Length: 455
Image (cartoon, rainbow, N blue to C red; front, side, top):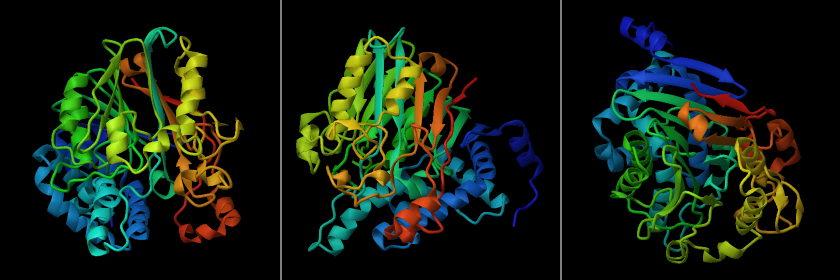
């Protein structure tokens, strides 16, 4: 049951935050001291948080056969001592804000929810391997997240930076990734980021900060390094985005205390200088920071760094395998060649929604297209990234930012799919009854237009 707000809480909600719903997105502005902005977050998104926790408690159990309390205990044991007072207060605020709306949750649950990617996808396989060494589990059993690029200089129409990204994930989880938070802390940089209810870092990742940094990534699939004694990725990412003013500062923060969880190919831009960079971060291996003021970097879930790809992933041949993510790597090269010198926000929207399948040599949305539609892939050809036919996984959005939008702390976003195609959950489950375990959990995503957010 909800409770009346105190006078202070009323001021925080009324005067220091703002909620807007637009074209499937939830745009939330929060500000103030750590607990205050957390309370605003939890209060405004309480019911979305409740829905996200319901889905992801179920998802965690489906993947691991463990109740979510198992991961709540692990998060407290492994990560509580790493979190600084500022972000502990913000997470406590999220919990109490949701409680004020009648949603049952706690600081420990919010901590575990923020740790989901580290714990369920990276830590849990190490525990399973200890318990059942006869049947080893590979880390990040469910991979292939995201397509992205960043371009600058003579690659773009006006020489400024253009960045684009779409999020691939299990629909059960990703259906809750429709939050854009504009966060103004008392200390550090203002942050605008795509995230999920209850998360303090982006994790998609698509972020702009007040110092002009532009940040996105694609996951390195098949990555196997993990050290449970080190700092969780979500915490390093949030700190890097809030307190970095240069690409080098961001890289230093992410690298220090790395745990191997959620290993990514990071695409970074500095809108003040026009420089872009790619940095791939593993546990043992890290790529040199590649930089340019003329050109582009792309991401498609394959490490570009040879050492990282060969030594720390399970499929170093993915680079050339156009039956899998190698098809997207080839497609990026062709699109960049076709559009070099012309790339702007409008063209970026088209590129991130591309449906060409390099393996089939035709336009067909599939597990190999930049706008991923694994749910429409019959797996007759290619490898469907290891998923069974028509698996409910793929791109659920599209985002584009350029120097101009970054200066306004804004971005362009399309919720549902980057291409605008709708997803009807009831129709999908009727067509594919093998996924009946998702009944009551899967949410439809209607076709939506591109929206613009910013000052």
